[in-house]
Amino acid sequence: MKIELLKLAHARSGDKGDTANVGVIALRDEFYPLLVREVTTERVKAHFGAMVKGAVERFELPNLKALNFLLHESLGGGGTLSLMTDAQGKTFSTALLRMHIEIADDEAKNLGLI
Amino acid sequence: MKDKVRVAGGQGFWGDLLTAPIDQVRGGQIDYLMLDYLAEVTMSIVQKQKQRDPKAGYARDFVSLMREILPDCVEKNIKVLSNAGGVNVKGCAEAIKDVAVELGLNGRVKIGVVTGDDVLGRLTEFLDGGVAIDNMDTGESLSEILDKVQSANVYLGAQPLVEALDKGAQIIVGGRLTDTGLTLAPLMHEFGWRFDDWDKVAAGTIGGHIIECGGQCSGGNCQFDWEAIPDLANIGFPIVEAYPNGEFVITKHENTGGLVNIPSIKEQLLYEMGDPKSYITPDVIADFTTIQLAGEGENRVRVSGIKGNKNTDFYKVSVAYTGGWKAVGTLVYAYPQAFEKAKAADAILRARLDKLGLRFDTILTEFVGVNATHGHLSGEPRADIPEVQLRFGVRGQSKADVERFTKELAPLILTGPPAVTGFAGGRPKVEEIMAYFPALIPKSLIETKVEIIEA
Image (tube, rainbow over all chains, first blue to last red; front, side):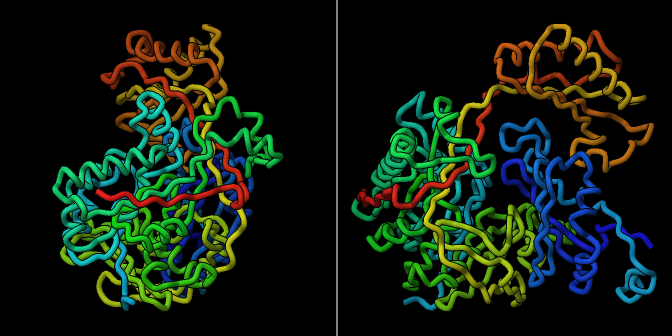
């Protein structure tokens, strides 16, 4: 089955220059391994497409059951240079949580998702 | 030595809730109040204010606030740490001194004045001396933008603040102080932590990171079950209750709104995060992957286990320079076919700008209500969408061209697609762009200074 990340995680995003960061936090601790396995840099890069012009980096925080993503060249120059409504990348958090991941029915059942 | 110290966050940025620091001082027991006024963009704004008026150049809101709370702070012995000094730290400190005198607190208030962060006048000296100052992101040399520089400040850490506290300062004013240092310094001062006790310095730094955005860790902007967060109208700002062993609890005053729980703290920990193993400040390199969180009753989260590594030999310097001009304007199109009309208006406007021969580095069109925040991820809007805001921005090196653009928006009302409104605000404002040049500079070149003045 396909499941939207919104069902598995909450998130907060911010900016550093032209880079947006998105911290993705498992809604329940047992979802974390699923996030590590499925929410890869490649998939996040593909999800954002033209919205992220540079590289995507991922860092793991197993202690917080969270991943941190850096989305380079995604804020139209960043800071006061940017013309974007969201020049500070505040809404990249929920934009990432729109992503869908594939999960086996058994696993979904074990995690109480169906 | 105290067995615990309570540091309250009172301001997440210049423009945050004016009542928050007053509530922190009056709503319960605290030992310190930290106030962060400076975002990157703020430094160039205060620099411009100082150019127009040599007595300006700092956060005047801080002076109004001190007029309100200084008597409480004196009576309860609450110490205040702030970077409100902007690019005129002494001017700010003098204004606070005047307030103290005005309130009849003569002889009862020591003000610590921390300077040395402002290196605007020293950039040429550094470059002539062979110091490489290169953009951390692009590698570009500072010499290429030197003639456009408006402000240049290094981020100072906790050290001069601890010195000021050791000298008995009650109100500390500085310029470009790291927001984390404002929380760390009181803990170092009270608990006598050594500057090379990296784990404790990292703990104080992470405590500072959690409360530096005010209500953003106590229920504000929190996605986790946001509808269940109580009484945000009366949101309680955060307090770090720290212990000598480096552990601390994040909490807030009783009888306030908002929520401090593990999800709210996790969200703030990840805010503006880079590599979590290497959170670099002037004081330490903190490792966010060592943080342990535990709930400890209502609105209390214990933070422990924090490890840190030796700090670097560099300060970060933030240079602001003029980077051209920009303007953004909006129009609103209504049902039916709101999105189609907005798209048609965008095409017409672009054709007119083109015909006028105006030159821009960037033109950006967004359709608010359709794709302004989530871009293509939002998908195609419904056909019967009630309204769409066309948001059109340009950026370029020619002020005249940007100004000319601002006169092309209103004509669309009578000469473009129908059912359009939302131009009551007049022509878009032309703004000068401040671009940022982040670089590293050896600490050995910077001399911080701590003075105490008495009211």
